[in-house]
Length: 140
Image (cartoon, rainbow, N blue to C red; front, side, top):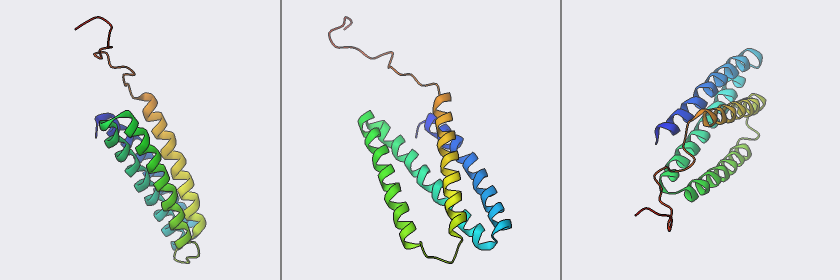
C-alpha cells in the first residue's frame, strides 16, 4: 500500500469509527441493547467493506490504471452482493434492531465517502509522469 492510500484509509476510517461509536451510544440510549448491537454490526460492516475496497484498489493500482478501475468496479459489485446477502439472511432477525443497523450503515457510508473524497482532494498527486518519454518526440 502506498503512503497516499494509507492516508486516505485513515482519513476515512477514523471519522467513520467516531460516527459508529456515536451511533452505538445513541442506539443504546434510545432502543436498548438490541439497538446498540445493530448499530455496532452496521458500523463494522461498513468499515470492513470500505477498507477492503481501498486495499484492493491500492493493490490493483500498482499493476495498472486499468486494473485499478476494474478492481474498484468489482469491489463495488461484491459489496452490493454481500450486503444483499446479509440483508436477506438476517432480514427477519430479532437479535438486533434493524432500524439502528440500517441508519448506522447509511450514516457511516456517507461519512466514509465524504472523508474519502476529502482525502483524495487534499492529496497532492501528479497527474502526469514528468519523466515519461513520448515516442517520436525528441530525446533518446
